[in-house]
Length: 251
Picture (cartoon, rainbow, N blue to C red):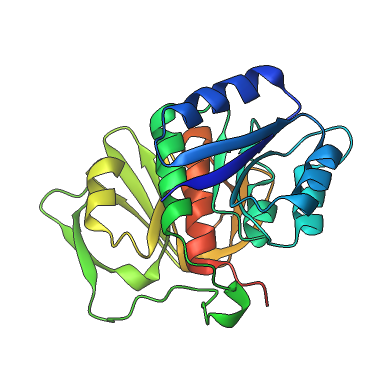
């Protein structure tokens, strides 16, 4: 199956890289490259294109404005050097959000999604805002700083975890527990459907997210956490994917 595609990007070097990636992909057929989003929209009135690689920051129209005009006629993969537009992009059902410079393996995973994706309106799918821990008996046992003492913690009570070298602070709505293990080991023990690593030093419970302000994640019930949890650069892409798949609801 061949997928017709279009590049809309005002940065020539970015278009050259995308074109190189497309040429290496046997099921993609490049139908055109546009630096002007206006010219691209004019072309799309005459030609049916299945997949568009769309930049966000362009002088005539932003990528978000382009998406609104396009109206879902084509699948879109956003390509940008900036992460702050990811949430708004996913609100328009983009297939993926690629950060520049784009490595070929990441590009290829994105276009595979485009081939396999079935258009579904998020508004028609009942997606809960919070992802609850379904079994109340789920718990972890952690070794504390007090010799020989282990504490049982119900997974559903955890708000977030802060890693500090060879130990972690586990925060609930009412307590802080210091456990003698590193954050990487604890991450493996927690259900991936309910917890997410968002920084080299932080894991959050998805059902505790109350808001996102720039690169700060605000939580609802965490003890003594007046400031947000920082969203690390290397974790942003996965974070926004998780928002789309698990907790974002247009309604």
